[in-house]
Amino acid sequence: MQKLVEIIKSRGPGLSEADIFRALCSDVYHLLNADLISIWSIEDDGDSIVRRFLFENGQELDQDQSAEVRLSRTEHPDYFAEILSSICLLAPDVRDNPHLESLVDIYFDPQGVQSLLDYVIYRNMVPVGIICCEARDARSWSMTDAEKIRSLTVAMSFEFEAQIFPLN
Image (cartoon, rainbow, N blue to C red; front, top):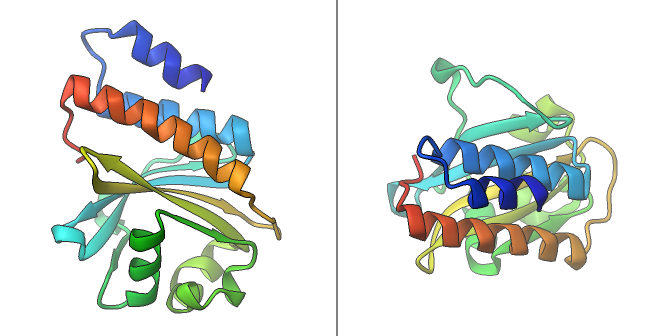
C-alpha cells in the first residue's frame, strides 16, 4: 500500500484520478505479483465495463483508444452476474469457471491468461469499477489476496470521496 498511501498523503494540486489508479496498480503488483493488472470502469448503468488502465509485469501499457476493450452484460451475463453480486471473483483456472466461459476465446486465450482475481471498486456504496489481476500460469488465489485488494480499494475510495473524482 506504499505508493497509494504516498500519493494520498501528498495531496498535490496536480493529483488526478489516473495518478491514484496507477498507484493502486503498482501496489497490487507488489503485493500479488500478478502478470496483468487492469482497471475497468462500469458504464451504461452496469451494462458494460471498459478497460481504462493496463499494467503488465508492473509496467503501464499504453492503451490505444481506437482499440478500446469493452465487455457487455448481454454477451457475458454470467460474468456480470457473478462479479457484481459477489464483489470478488477468484478463478484458479479461467477455463474451469462457468462464470468466465464466454470470455475464454475472446479475452483470456489471446492474452494467455490462466487465472484471475477480480474485485469490485465502490464509490458511495455503488459499484463503479473492477480491478482485475491475471496470471499466465495456474495460480490459487486466496481470500487473503482478495483482502489485500479490498484494503487498497477502501483507501482509494476514501480519497475519491475527498477529491470527488469521476471514474472516467
